[in-house]
Image (cartoon, rainbow, N blue to C red; front, side, top):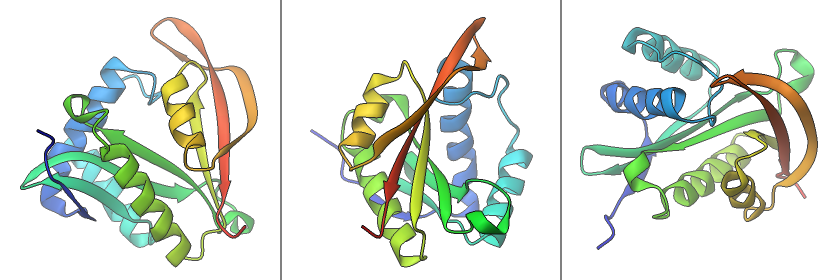
Length: 168
């Protein structure tokens, strides 16, 4: 039986579980191009920066258990990019394939529309076909590929960019 979950704004007490999910992705996947996991202090600073930039951090919760999280941040740092955000969606390994990612991305898109965001961007390891197809299912379109711009697990990684225009 699939667990029921709710999508809410992340709280400070959610950070240890968010860190666990993200650090798992860092250590075991190419969904995140970081090489080393981060401390809880890092995630506390990250959440403070998200709050200051008015960028939501959403979590999927089943009771007190975090199943996944989603957020966005400005695509590039210049003022002209204020309405273009790059997003992230991470789901706990055991909860993948159960609709958690879809619920998070749907909520994040709604949040972006409410916050006057014009474009959401996804940067995905080009070999991650599931994630690319997942995003296409929400209307994202591939807009470019950058060969061998990342390196992890002793191999070069290509990066595919997808984009969703929210005001079309």
